[in-house]
Amino acid sequence: MDECEKQPLLLRDEPPPRQRDTDGGSYPWKFVLGLMGLFALLSWHHAMHSDSFERHNRKDDDGGYCRTYAGEHIEWKACGQIGPDHRELECSSIDVPMDQFNATNSGSKTFGIPLIRMRAKGASRDDTATQNMLLNPGGPGGSGLEFMYRRGVQLSTIVGEDKFHLLSFDPRGINQSQPLASCYPTPEARRELSSDVRNKKIVEDSGELWAWTANFVQACADTMGEHGKYINTPQTAADMNSILDAVGQEDMVYWGFSYGTLLGQTYATLFPERSKRVIIDGVANQFDWYESPLDLEEMADTDSVFWGFLDECIKAGPGNCTLAPLANTTQELFDKVVTFVEEMRDDPLSVYVNNTVYGVLDYWAVWYNGIFPALYKPANWYTLASNLASMLQGNATDAFLAYGRDAAWDIPSDAENVVSLNDGASGPQHWPEQQDRKSLVDKLVPHFNQSLFGASEYDHYFAKRAWAIPKTHGYVPRRGVQTAHPLLILSTTYDPVCPLISARSANAAFGGSRLVEVKGYGHCSLAVASMCIVRHVRTFLYEGKLPDGNTQCEVDGPYFIKPEEGSKTVSTVQFVDQEEQRIHLAQLELARDLWFKPW
Ligand SMILES: *[C@@H]1O[C@H](CO)[C@@H](O)[C@H](O)[C@H]1NC(C)=O
Ligand SMILES: *[C@@H]1O[C@H](CO)[C@@H](O)[C@H](O)[C@H]1NC(C)=O
Ligand SMILES: *[C@@H]1O[C@H](CO)[C@@H](O)[C@H](O)[C@H]1NC(C)=O
Ligand SMILES: *[C@@H]1O[C@H](CO)[C@@H](O)[C@H](O)[C@H]1NC(C)=O
Ligand SMILES: *[C@@H]1O[C@H](CO)[C@@H](O)[C@H](O)[C@H]1NC(C)=O
Ligand SMILES: *[C@@H]1O[C@H](CO)[C@@H](O)[C@H](O)[C@H]1NC(C)=O
Ligand SMILES: *[C@@H]1O[C@H](CO)[C@@H](O)[C@H](O)[C@H]1NC(C)=O
Image (tube, rainbow, N blue to C red):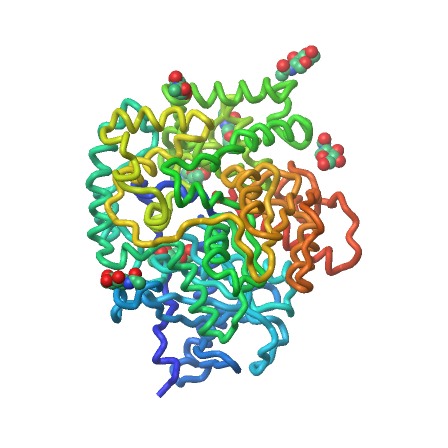
């Protein structure tokens, strides 16, 4: 019998259909690097259907490509090839106890954790010297499998193709992990029962959201049953040890982005002795995350990034930013854009392309499908500026086609809510002074007012206050954690959802850690190209060396570049060799990882 038959088959012939419903139950994934959209779907689909996959899949029928490696305890199957070099991917899965911290609770219950790996170039099957580097793309709710298919090639270029095996996974509850973090038993139930928060007025519409949320949180608890309680970050941190054990590796080598920094900080606190090479990039404040009802820092720099977008536009000038001719100063441009979009709250624009494509472009679409996601990735700024400029000048067609029809953030997954609410100060007992709707609204309004984009958290906090699943983890973030090797912490200067102050907080909590700041805008260091960052990452990974003190890096290139000229654009630094040139191109591809459809 084929040994691999013992493994659950991970890959389906068809990716499950992506749902299009607007869903109040899932709020935007704030903490995710880049994201999927059409792009991901296409690359996923491509990987699933590539010739090599089908060839391998047939081969599988006669048990041909079950792989094992020296020192490991699991078997792998080929699951596609990616990139111009046709780098092979292999997939496996492990079962982990439902409760990693208490075998009595688990009994025989488990979560299935799918794994994906791109082995280091040239590593033989009995190579036990090359280490696996674990990756988490963020979310919570981001799929490590999808991340590897989409961005594995570029990440491998950055860390060095022959230096590490890149290994990622769908965290418990997420994507192809089983059982799923879900608040709806079926896609039909989601379509019928979810609420739509688009354009809701925070005070005026709070009655309906309050009433709906009471049902929603109960449905989350009922849909997931007993497993639901154990879908949280400390459990996932422990799952990462199960993964290491499965591949016979003692040391944790890790690069986590965005929410992946919470996972990294949690891991490093719980398992400091195994934390040998931990990189956290685009850092969220774990003290807020676990202990505070409201996230106090998260949006500290969001408006600064928006300002930076306009400021860089003015600096780039009319030839490189089509918004620039509309004003002489950044303040003037800010006022113009904000006033225009604010007016769309009451007077949305009607856009008619033809008799099959038309609709209404409203405030919410421009603000939360257009501007906010673009703050993550300055490579989107050129297009954003051009869409806004046309709109302000009376032609909203491009803005409508880009932001008006499909909610870029709408991901049919409840993992974001489930993980973050199971982790944090959720449920009525943590909100003693918000036992009725009015007092909750009174607490939220000034909080939301701290940022122009604050209302994106609207339904999330209603669910947080009402959350019905009990907290089962006992994790408490600590300061003064001494890890086996100090952490490398990466951040941009202005990150729209993971501000520099949160990186400083992690820097203060982890003994000997160093913070390397890219002097730029965007979410995580990968938002911009910076050779200096790569040098720090490689020196850390290869030699274990950190800079003497916290330090800064420059961004290698301009913010406003025509998308079609992107890869041709001459960077602002000289590269020492071809290898650096290649790395720079990989960084540009990562930086361009678009949130919304690239048309
Ligand atoms: C494990 O769970 C069982 C049953 O829920 C409980 O009685 C026991 O105290 C727990 N053990 C620990 C170490 O928390
Ligand atoms: C898993 O991720 C893929 C790729 O992003 C997506 O198409 C699919 O819908 C996801 N599946 C689930 C069950 O979430
Ligand atoms: C666009 O910006 C580049 C530098 O980033 C500059 O060399 C070029 O002159 C600008 N083009 C125009 C038309 O202003
Ligand atoms: C910018 O300043 C110039 C000179 O004062 C003026 O002619 C022009 O109208 C201003 N442009 C805008 C968009 O306000
Ligand atoms: C309507 O416009 C869309 C978007 O530009 C286009 O794809 C479609 O072919 C057009 N349909 C007709 C009937 O012209
Ligand atoms: C508005 O912009 C679209 C897309 O760029 C273009 O096709 C259309 O001709 C423009 N409409 C007018 C009235 O200029
Ligand atoms: C919050 O902002 C709104 C306008 O956006 C304003 O009407 C309201 O007074 C502000 N509330 C507080 C408490 O600052």
